Length: 235
Image (cartoon, rainbow, N blue to C red):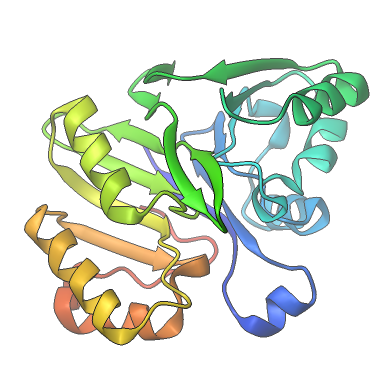
């Protein structure tokens, strides 16, 4: 089962123009996050020969604009999807989605099977900008290990990795996505990289909000176990 990076943005210039976030396709019918721009999301799908009408499930990591912004354009193309949100998402988000598109919205609290071998981690609670935030990641069961896709890791990447290990009981073969280390001090980044190594994450593909400095530290530590992020890469 392939994982494809459909859209990704990680530079300050991109963020200034509201081009930010990420989106992964797992298999042919599960989309994890919807990027910030539906126009770019659908354009990339066309270039990658991805048929949006085959998508049946959209899992949103958290409620921020850069991970949900492209959803509307996708639903105009294909309204026949189930949308999975954390139980802690605002009611206004769900109401607006149902009012505009009449889609089925599923609130997730505990780990949930989305499709064969594809699961939500269940919501993970954290603090961001002095507010409670809820986030879920996507867990792809490979048999002896799991691959983990993350949106922004606002609750903390270590907490999210530990939660997946506790809830699924398998080692992590791949950790891919935004690790939210963009504004961290070098010493803090190094400490987090140490801990990710200690937790025995085999491979890593940091992108989006991870930050250039953090990516370089991961590159030096993981060497050929780091996968450079680029749109269209298959994992």
